[in-house]
Length: 446
Image (cartoon, rainbow, N blue to C red; front, side, top):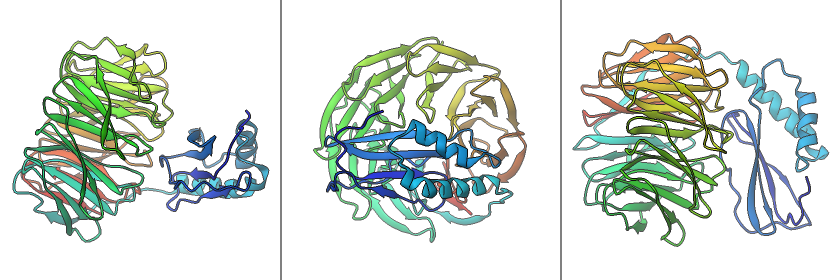
């Protein structure tokens, strides 16, 4: 593949290493003044970021089959054949980083989490919690109309973001950068804030009903909002302007997600469908038809080839992200599916149900490979740790649980909340957990 007109820095990221290492290559003696940061840091992959003909471009090379016994010398040679941006002069650097990644894959993980701090976070119940990329900060949204920024290490409140006139329901950092925060509210607006100063950069107005979901694109140039008005909107972060309205659903949009390259977005709706959109044009590409009840969750896998959807019809469905065709129906739960997710490499799918269980499926075989049973109430949130070997669940039974992703065994019960836990998250290293509850508190676990 030829790369004509490359006129800036190439940065290479090897992921799942605790300290990101950049390899900088100069082309044509120029270095573009544009700041280049990491694009997405996902497990087991190489991310290439470069400027070609004054346009920022990103390529990814997955390492999904990397194992502790893989011949990394042969692997690097194979990568070089497929990707001419990685030149021979950097072969030793990439080799070194792959060996470090292999070492991390061999590390045993028998960690037990202990309660570090209980934060009386808000005067009314929380709606959501989210980490920045490094895990040094996290945010909480609440029915008290505010979003708060917290220091993870100390548990101290750093800042309160005030200005919304109703519930702050959806919140997000612009990871991996982490310098901006978006908040979506029942007041029908989305606000963009500075993480460091708490300044409100923009208030995005235009929806005619509550905003219930939002996401930054990976490049942190856009924020997408989904609303009960049946539309989603894309907003320009720098200009503070609406770029396009995504109209096509006939009922409320309650889930949305960008793919890892940022050129596609999916929206899930109470109209039983998920729609795949082209981000650049706002064009509807495919409508994913087949669910028989409201959509609860939808997500791309890491290499953008698959989409998983969860529905109140008690099933998950797997779809081809390029063609929109249905691949498989993942059934077995006896009640509504409330949340679905891929692991960080897209090899496993976890589906959390109102029946109090989680089923783990192989994305390759479409078979159920583990059942997570033990909660005494519905599970509203499920997520994998970055390494992919642990699953965290949040339940209405007032507990969060940590599970072995391969066996389905419950490894630990995180208890102490006095009301339903509806949100939980790992930091990027996987050594800190946050749980958010209707008891108005947030708990940090180390």
